[in-house]
Length: 275
Image (cartoon, rainbow, N blue to C red; front, side, top):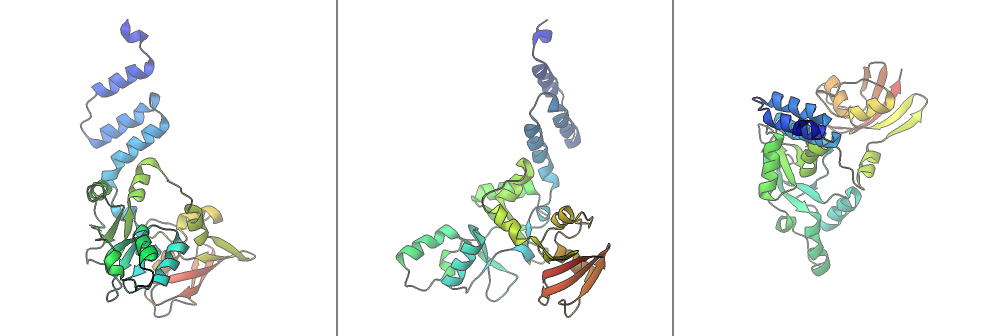
């Protein structure tokens, strides 16, 4: 009698708790079945938590080509310019002798005492930057989350098997895997930097760091982002190794892509024309 008078969600909760899952998949199915008595957002967060061990940090990191960083020998004016333009609060600092090696992390707030008290002195970025936390590309996201928590860090440097910097992962990147996209006042500015601008009829100027998913959404295309994430990466994948990237033309799925700006190994600007 008591069972019948209980609210349906409490009966479902008791049944859910009395079921002992033996595998992660069984536990995930129980969470998905709990939509009957839990809020959709709560279920989504539980799914995100259970998915963390299966998510490698390389899947959520910001790749090296998209990093906003500093150099060990940058002067104060250069650093302030980067801080203002990016509106970020943490920056990986690369070695002046090895452009693939991060030697520290600079927090914008650590510059404040220098600006207010020692304005006339030359900045030594090595004094201000903090010891970086390094994690391998293959690390699980839940492991990295625990490391960030234990070290009270908000950013980790991701390295490949050779010790070369692959990118960075932040506390926000991992939390977004649990709670979904976290937008702040700077996200819109980041999207503008990756914007696709009309150039002519059926032609657009595209930043190379534009995510393939973003391009697909705007242009109703279906380019794969399984192996690379950006439009520049997509073209590099097709071209392979060449001596001069600038001026190269790539034809893909009814589109003509011309590389407008590039250096020896990175594409910066693309002109996309729909055939």
